Length: 236
Image (cartoon, rainbow, N blue to C red; front, side, top):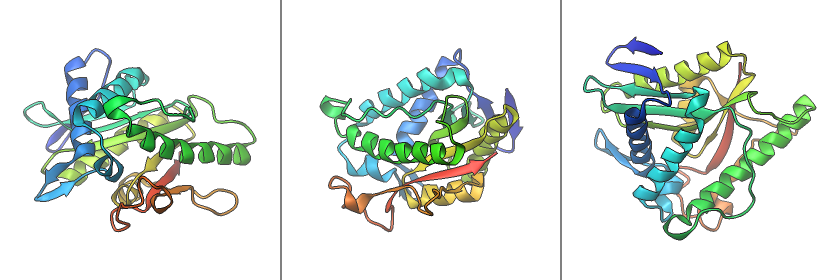
């Protein structure tokens, strides 16, 4: 499926598009590791704070895309040179709670991020069970896992169209809602403003958040950049 919008072309990535998958993996990796946009350094705070190598993170991203792309929830933005400059990747899987370190060697610090995500995901699944009276199952919700935009122009357009593409698709296919783990203040604002999502509130009236100040490996992250990872949600 191809949608023409302004400066960019938007495509739902398919398994056969191996070149675009490679470019999508590169775009996400650059966005998380750090990229200069309009003279400002943009970076995911946990990845930037921990000892994570770009080549290891690329492999992680590519493995994720290859394992989920068949579900049809990875959308990319391409510029006039046919280069991927924006990616929003998701899946409809129930979060997997492993509970132990799985990454080794030069990628061992990724376990810190894994445990943060598992913390908020487990609490979200518990809250879903309380609200629905049944456990969350595959195919119920769209999980927006990674977003990255390296486009220098019309970035807001790219972000908005990526989100619109996947959220409208999820609604058309009968999914109940959309959720994401927002790992920094800017991500929360973007997901609220452009995707219509909100911080998830459980039945006790609490936000589901992993606070970085309470994490020995992440407590040095400035609260002006990020105070924690939040579950954000949108009902469809």
